[in-house]
Every structure is written in structure tokens, then in C-alpha cells.
Amino acid sequence: MSVHLITGAGSGIGAAVARRLLARGDELWLLARDAGRAQQLAEQFPGAYTLVGDLAEPARLSWALSHQAPPDRLDSLLHVAGVVELGPVGDLTPKIWNETLAVNLVGPAELTRLLLPQLRLSRGHVVLVNSGAGLFAHAEWSAYAASKHGLKALADSLRAEERPNGVRVTSVYPGRTATPMQEKVHRQEGKSYDADRWIDPESVATAVLTALDLPRDAELTDLTVRPGA
Image (tube, rainbow, N blue to C red; front, side):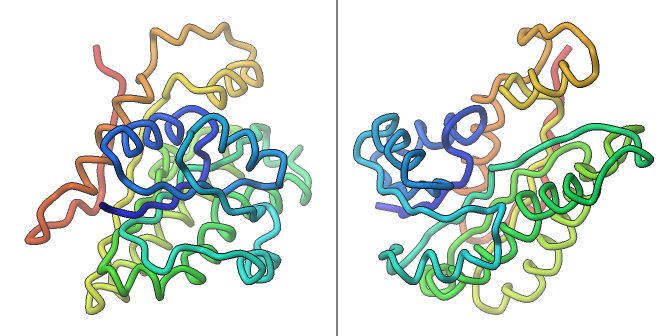
């Protein structure tokens, strides 16, 4: 039985991945930002374990995990959580920049650092659910795109560093996906939202599981997922 830790499991892509892994009998650990959210996740995913740690406060993650009992080994660490705030560079405040970079980049980097011993032990896999914005930045997407460009750099460096330890690293770049985040983006853009126009989270989950289940003789490093016709 494989052991996985997922961030962002409460909805969207993270929830789809969590459901699939639980359904096949894997052991699941879910990161929650606070105790209340941990209780919600435990009810949403019976049989899963929870850990409390706020990605918005990366400097406190070490303290938080030291007061809990994370798994002794990990077959995968799945970074799915993320936040988005759109706006012109001239309007974005340091608060927005710092919050976006913390949750989308610095938090994942610190969580990875803290869990590398468990990943090395299992010759595990780090999957970072990035975004099309991690490859190209449009107007009013600067903070989010910067965080996701940084997440790509994190993945590329980590892959080069951890290859001798047998740790695989995959970046997944979904296009617009029918999630609560996408609804928020449409509100910020002033556009009507039609979920049927965008990728089903289950399709992105399939891409993630494909990377996880690839035999050890190969590694999927970068997966781009785009809405179909």
C-alpha cells in the first residue's frame, strides 16, 4: 500500500486525486490549515489521516509538524493547494504578493524540505500541480504567474538534486479547470462561469495518477493538460 500526502484536498483537483487514491486502498494524509479544516477533511475522506499546517505561514510549518506525527515514509507528496488574486501590477499590494508567494511557492518548498527524509526512504515522488500560468503570464496575472513560474523552478532544481536519491519530480500544468478557484477567477475577470467549458478535475487527477504509476524505468517530468475541443 502506497502512502501519500496531499495539500489542497478539500475541493477541485486535490479532492479528485484524494478520492481516487482512497478508492484504490492507498494510505492518505491530508494537510489542513487549521484544526477545523482538518475535521472537515476527516469527514469528507473517511479513513484518511490529517496533519495541521498552514502553507500561508511557511516559517511555522516545521514547528507545526514537530508537534504531530507525520508518516515515517512517503511514496508521494502532492502539492495541489493554491490561491489566486488577479490585478494589474500597479494595483497589487505587498500583502497580496506575500500571501500568493507563501501559499503557492514558499510553503510547498518548506513542506518538501521537511518531508524529504521520508521521500528519500521510499524513493518517492513529488508532484507539483502548477498551471498554464507557470509557463506564460497574461495581463493581470503577475502575482499568481510569478508564484507558478517559481514553482517550476523549484521542481526543476529539486529533480536535479534528488535524482541520485531516487526521488522523482513531476510538474503538471493544467489549463482552466472547473474548480472553485476557477469560479473566483471568472468573478475577478467579470465573466460568466460555465464549468462545462473547462477541464474536469477528474481528468487532471488522471494525469497525476499516470505520473505516479509510471514504472521506475521512466519519469514524467512535465505534463501539460489543456481543455479539449
